[in-house]
Image (cartoon, rainbow, N blue to C red; front, side):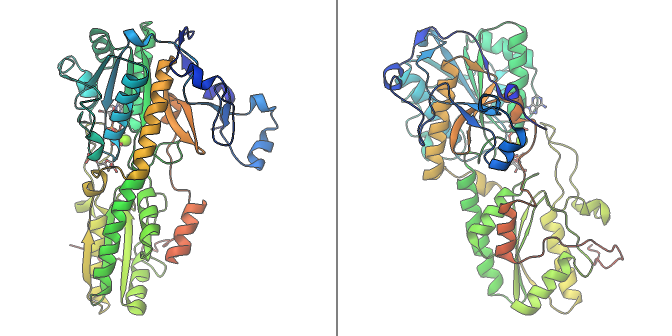
Length: 459
Ligand SMILES: Nc1ncnc2c1ncn2[C@@H]1O[C@H](COP(=O)(O)OP(=O)(O)OP(=O)(O)O)[C@@H](O)[C@H]1O
Ligand SMILES: O=P(O)(O)OC[C@H]1O[C@](O)(CO)[C@@H](O)[C@@H]1O
Ligand SMILES: [Mg+2]
């Protein structure tokens, strides 16, 4: 999908009439290598070849509006009520974003009323709309030291009109939605319903995904803390595998459609022999298949370490009739429940190595929730705070139906609809995957599977 400048424009509620608390400090600021001035824009693409391909004049080149404070704002802070909601799966840094939003709104803009909606977008339904937490700087003072979210979260769909009713009934002028692709989709529908009713409510998204699968953001907040934690598990399994006869270490990590956690954690631990991700299908059997490669590793090195994303190899269940590992249906938000690729690999590798006389010592772990429930590390804490600042500035200046994101190191506004227009995935031809191949020395692909019944069936 080719994006044009007009696709990247962010909606505004109206003219900015009020002086911002940042007017003075902004009066002398200009774009520099470390600052993008109000009114300047950040390029979507960043290579000479991509730019020359358009041959567009600079003011027509696709670009994002820069995030940050404005000299004039849309809302009168004295009369603003803000709402905050966190949705979907947990991610390190949720509390840091909440704290950053509350601090910025209260300390600089002097907003007096901030409501925290509880348990995700469920908190905006008629049943739960009055069950809110009053958020003050005092209330959020220490929350960033813990993982999770003080507001709670949930999955499952809600009616957009019912949620708009809640915002109107609670007098909310600005809603911050901290969520993943589902949350951003819900925020988009909610914004549309607000617009249809001609209401003056700003909706600003703060993209959150442990899988790093949202587009138009360099890397999502909390991702670094999560993969750092995952690295510990890979290191432990590597030590175990190396110390055991025919050791096989397997670590299954989150990553439904995108193998970023697996790739980064494997690079950080620098001890994996094989990394398997959803973006690159692999075959189990055959001379070039995964099982043969595992066997060769165990024969030559004495052990093997495999890191896999939960969404890897999902085609194998059907292909090999292994229905016992297959996922069943969808979760409350419509996300497909995945088959258990970790269990499948554990059992098929055990069967294969036993059959070739290399009965393995299997060390399999699925750290799952242990990696996404941790508190944000120092890097993510800074990132969350800066995203929160950007979100507050965007909302107070009347931007709506937009998310704040860091794109090519700059903070920008991204139209909400774009956040769900595509999925960020590891590019098999990109430099991240090349680094994984350079580090593991694994072949670019395992397979194709000859489908000759070489797979040792597992019971
Ligand atoms: N297609 C949709 N239409 C309307 N609302 C949706 C849709 N998908 C999700 N939502 C809403 O967004 C919320 C969060 O969605 P979901 O459970 O998919 O998590 P998420 O925000 O994608 O986070 P993550 O994927 O990081 O766990 C749901 O509770 C639901 O209210
Ligand atoms: O068990 P839950 O809470 O539905 O979350 C699991 C999913 O959430 C995520 O962390 C984010 O979507 C996925 O990686 C994982 O599959
Ligand atoms: Mg999601």
